[in-house]
Length: 190
Image (cartoon, rainbow, N blue to C red; front, side, top):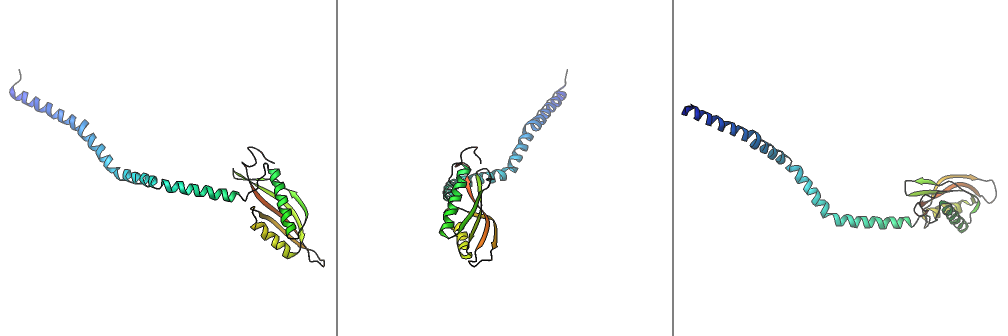
Protein backbone atom coordinates (compact mmCIF):
# COMPACT_ATOMS: atom_id res chain seq x y z
CA UNK A 1 0.00 0.00 0.00
CA UNK A 2 1.08 3.54 -0.72
CA UNK A 3 1.87 5.93 1.97
CA UNK A 4 0.38 9.41 2.15
CA UNK A 5 3.70 10.83 1.19
CA UNK A 6 3.85 8.66 -1.97
CA UNK A 7 0.27 9.62 -2.87
CA UNK A 8 1.12 13.28 -2.48
CA UNK A 9 4.28 12.87 -4.62
CA UNK A 10 2.31 11.00 -7.28
CA UNK A 11 -0.41 13.69 -7.28
CA UNK A 12 2.24 16.44 -7.60
CA UNK A 13 3.97 14.51 -10.43
CA UNK A 14 0.61 14.06 -12.23
CA UNK A 15 -0.18 17.75 -11.85
CA UNK A 16 3.31 18.66 -13.07
CA UNK A 17 2.85 16.37 -16.12
CA UNK A 18 -0.61 17.87 -16.80
CA UNK A 19 0.82 21.38 -16.46
CA UNK A 20 3.70 20.46 -18.78
CA UNK A 21 1.30 19.04 -21.40
CA UNK A 22 -0.97 22.09 -21.07
CA UNK A 23 1.96 24.45 -21.57
CA UNK A 24 3.67 22.43 -24.34
CA UNK A 25 0.57 21.68 -26.43
CA UNK A 26 -1.79 24.50 -25.48
CA UNK A 27 -0.31 27.72 -24.18
CA UNK A 28 3.02 27.82 -26.06
CA UNK A 29 1.54 27.09 -29.53
CA UNK A 30 -1.13 29.72 -28.94
CA UNK A 31 1.57 32.17 -27.81
CA UNK A 32 3.61 31.45 -30.97
CA UNK A 33 0.55 31.99 -33.22
CA UNK A 34 -0.27 35.20 -31.43
CA UNK A 35 3.32 36.44 -31.83
CA UNK A 36 3.30 35.54 -35.55
CA UNK A 37 -0.01 37.36 -36.06
CA UNK A 38 1.35 40.33 -34.15
CA UNK A 39 4.45 40.36 -36.37
CA UNK A 40 2.22 40.27 -39.50
CA UNK A 41 0.04 43.08 -38.19
CA UNK A 42 2.05 45.77 -40.00
CA UNK A 43 1.84 43.84 -43.27
CA UNK A 44 -1.89 43.36 -42.86
CA UNK A 45 -2.32 47.03 -42.05
CA UNK A 46 -0.45 48.05 -45.25
CA UNK A 47 -2.56 45.60 -47.26
CA UNK A 48 -5.75 47.01 -45.77
CA UNK A 49 -4.63 50.58 -46.58
CA UNK A 50 -3.76 49.54 -50.13
CA UNK A 51 -7.22 48.01 -50.62
CA UNK A 52 -8.90 51.08 -49.11
CA UNK A 53 -6.95 53.33 -51.49
CA UNK A 54 -7.92 51.13 -54.44
CA UNK A 55 -11.58 51.28 -53.47
CA UNK A 56 -11.40 55.03 -52.89
CA UNK A 57 -9.89 55.64 -56.34
CA UNK A 58 -12.17 53.22 -58.19
CA UNK A 59 -14.33 56.09 -59.49
CA UNK A 60 -11.24 57.96 -60.61
CA UNK A 61 -9.96 54.86 -62.45
CA UNK A 62 -13.31 54.50 -64.24
CA UNK A 63 -13.11 58.15 -65.28
CA UNK A 64 -9.51 57.72 -66.46
CA UNK A 65 -10.53 54.60 -68.40
CA UNK A 66 -13.39 56.46 -70.08
CA UNK A 67 -11.09 59.37 -70.91
CA UNK A 68 -8.48 57.04 -72.40
CA UNK A 69 -11.11 55.22 -74.46
CA UNK A 70 -12.39 58.56 -75.80
CA UNK A 71 -8.83 59.63 -76.67
CA UNK A 72 -8.25 56.32 -78.43
CA UNK A 73 -11.46 56.75 -80.47
CA UNK A 74 -10.37 60.29 -81.41
CA UNK A 75 -6.90 59.07 -82.40
CA UNK A 76 -8.30 56.18 -84.42
CA UNK A 77 -10.36 58.64 -86.45
CA UNK A 78 -7.07 59.37 -88.25
CA UNK A 79 -6.64 55.74 -89.34
CA UNK A 80 -7.51 54.25 -92.70
CA UNK A 81 -11.01 52.79 -92.90
CA UNK A 82 -10.74 50.11 -95.59
CA UNK A 83 -12.29 46.72 -94.95
CA UNK A 84 -9.15 44.93 -96.12
CA UNK A 85 -5.51 45.99 -96.37
CA UNK A 86 -5.86 46.10 -100.17
CA UNK A 87 -8.80 48.52 -99.95
CA UNK A 88 -6.91 50.57 -97.34
CA UNK A 89 -3.93 50.76 -99.74
CA UNK A 90 -6.22 52.06 -102.47
CA UNK A 91 -7.67 54.59 -99.98
CA UNK A 92 -4.15 55.75 -99.16
CA UNK A 93 -3.22 56.10 -102.84
CA UNK A 94 -6.36 58.16 -103.51
CA UNK A 95 -5.60 60.40 -100.53
CA UNK A 96 -2.03 60.95 -101.74
CA UNK A 97 -3.22 61.73 -105.27
CA UNK A 98 -5.65 64.33 -103.89
CA UNK A 99 -2.92 65.95 -101.79
CA UNK A 100 -0.53 65.95 -104.75
CA UNK A 101 -3.12 67.58 -107.00
CA UNK A 102 -3.81 70.27 -104.38
CA UNK A 103 -0.10 71.13 -104.26
CA UNK A 104 0.64 70.92 -108.02
CA UNK A 105 2.73 67.77 -107.64
CA UNK A 106 2.87 65.15 -110.38
CA UNK A 107 2.53 61.57 -109.20
CA UNK A 108 4.79 59.77 -111.65
CA UNK A 109 4.27 56.31 -110.16
CA UNK A 110 2.85 54.56 -107.14
CA UNK A 111 3.49 51.06 -105.86
CA UNK A 112 1.48 49.10 -103.34
CA UNK A 113 3.81 47.62 -100.75
CA UNK A 114 3.05 44.73 -98.36
CA UNK A 115 1.38 45.65 -95.11
CA UNK A 116 3.35 45.17 -91.90
CA UNK A 117 1.89 44.24 -88.54
CA UNK A 118 2.13 46.83 -85.78
CA UNK A 119 1.52 44.86 -82.63
CA UNK A 120 -1.62 42.77 -82.41
CA UNK A 121 -4.18 45.44 -83.28
CA UNK A 122 -2.84 47.46 -86.22
CA UNK A 123 -1.23 47.21 -89.64
CA UNK A 124 1.08 49.69 -91.28
CA UNK A 125 -0.06 50.24 -94.88
CA UNK A 126 2.85 51.62 -96.97
CA UNK A 127 2.73 53.10 -100.46
CA UNK A 128 5.82 53.69 -102.59
CA UNK A 129 5.69 56.89 -104.67
CA UNK A 130 7.68 58.84 -107.19
CA UNK A 131 6.69 62.48 -107.30
CA UNK A 132 7.89 65.45 -109.31
CA UNK A 133 7.38 69.10 -108.56
CA UNK A 134 8.89 72.36 -107.44
CA UNK A 135 10.63 72.51 -104.08
CA UNK A 136 8.05 74.80 -102.45
CA UNK A 137 5.21 72.55 -103.68
CA UNK A 138 6.96 69.44 -102.39
CA UNK A 139 7.56 71.05 -99.00
CA UNK A 140 3.91 72.10 -98.69
CA UNK A 141 2.86 68.58 -99.81
CA UNK A 142 4.98 66.97 -97.09
CA UNK A 143 3.58 69.38 -94.49
CA UNK A 144 0.05 68.55 -95.64
CA UNK A 145 0.79 64.83 -95.23
CA UNK A 146 1.64 65.44 -91.58
CA UNK A 147 -1.23 67.81 -90.88
CA UNK A 148 -4.13 66.09 -92.64
CA UNK A 149 -7.11 64.28 -91.20
CA UNK A 150 -5.40 60.90 -91.66
CA UNK A 151 -2.19 60.05 -89.86
CA UNK A 152 0.46 59.72 -92.54
CA UNK A 153 4.16 59.23 -92.05
CA UNK A 154 7.01 59.35 -94.50
CA UNK A 155 9.15 56.30 -93.80
CA UNK A 156 11.61 56.73 -96.67
CA UNK A 157 12.62 59.83 -98.66
CA UNK A 158 15.05 60.38 -101.51
CA UNK A 159 15.30 63.69 -103.39
CA UNK A 160 17.00 64.18 -106.78
CA UNK A 161 17.27 67.43 -108.66
CA UNK A 162 17.14 67.63 -112.41
CA UNK A 163 19.05 70.17 -114.49
CA UNK A 164 16.10 71.81 -116.18
CA UNK A 165 14.68 75.31 -116.39
CA UNK A 166 11.67 74.57 -114.18
CA UNK A 167 13.93 73.46 -111.30
CA UNK A 168 11.83 70.40 -110.69
CA UNK A 169 12.74 67.86 -108.06
CA UNK A 170 12.08 64.15 -108.31
CA UNK A 171 11.21 62.59 -104.99
CA UNK A 172 11.06 58.88 -104.21
CA UNK A 173 9.28 58.27 -100.95
CA UNK A 174 7.30 55.77 -98.99
CA UNK A 175 4.22 57.08 -97.22
CA UNK A 176 2.56 54.88 -94.62
CA UNK A 177 -0.74 55.00 -92.78
CA UNK A 178 -2.26 52.80 -90.09
CA UNK A 179 -5.20 50.39 -90.39
CA UNK A 180 -6.90 48.84 -87.38
CA UNK A 181 -7.05 45.07 -87.81
CA UNK A 182 -10.66 44.94 -86.64
CA UNK A 183 -11.62 47.26 -89.47
CA UNK A 184 -10.05 44.77 -91.89
CA UNK A 185 -11.99 41.85 -90.44
CA UNK A 186 -10.64 38.87 -88.50
CA UNK A 187 -7.74 37.06 -90.07
CA UNK A 188 -7.69 39.03 -93.32
CA UNK A 189 -4.37 40.08 -94.74
CA UNK A 190 -3.08 41.31 -98.04
